[in-house]
Image 1 (tube, rainbow, N blue to C red):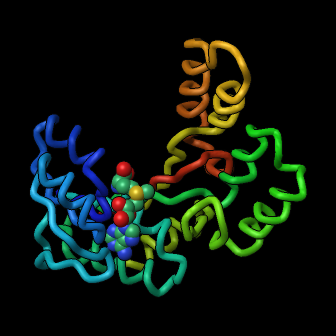
Image 2 (cartoon, rainbow, N blue to C red; image 1 turned 90 degrees about the vertical axis):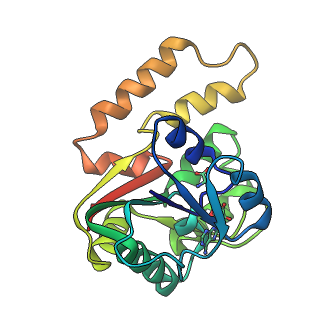
Length: 215
Ligand SMILES: C[S@@+](CC[C@H](N)C(=O)[O-])C[C@H]1O[C@@H](n2cnc3c(N)ncnc32)[C@H](O)[C@@H]1O
């Protein structure tokens, strides 16, 4: 499988341990150097992959779409994934949810402050963050992410909420003094993620989205 924007190999590591053959591509030399200890890794850009047509069973992009605010760049990245995956293969692409910062900044108890209200409102309005405290980032709606995969020619597209709708409750407890979230709270949040899966309207409450499509 091809891990596009695989960073230092966080996911490549467990995939290799599970027996998959992974090649990783990333534009940051330090990431490529670190990932080389785990799998075959090379410098590259999601928008112009070196791989041949129909050469991988699975292509994953767990990050590049966050960093491509221009829709033409995201189209190129998904078209490249579709080009290099074999017919019948899988493309999996992660995105940050449009509403993630609204939920997140409640957990720090500062969403209502002058410092945070406007930047978070701006992300909701424009889908882009290009200011301080976080990298240049694009925030998807679930249906928009599904449409982008379909426009690239992928079929049977499904979108999953990675953290589920209760992640911000866990994070809020992490911010409070004390022992942090209990095992029961974590187990309940995991149960909420599974229970929410058939209900696409609940995707809006997850922090990240994972879209999966077939070539
Ligand atoms: C949030 S990190 C995720 C890393 C890894 N996939 C993970 O899940 O831990 C985003 C990654 O996308 C990479 N990236 C950014 N722009 C990219 C592009 N145009 N093509 C490929 N990768 C890109 C970054 O270098 C970074 O390693």
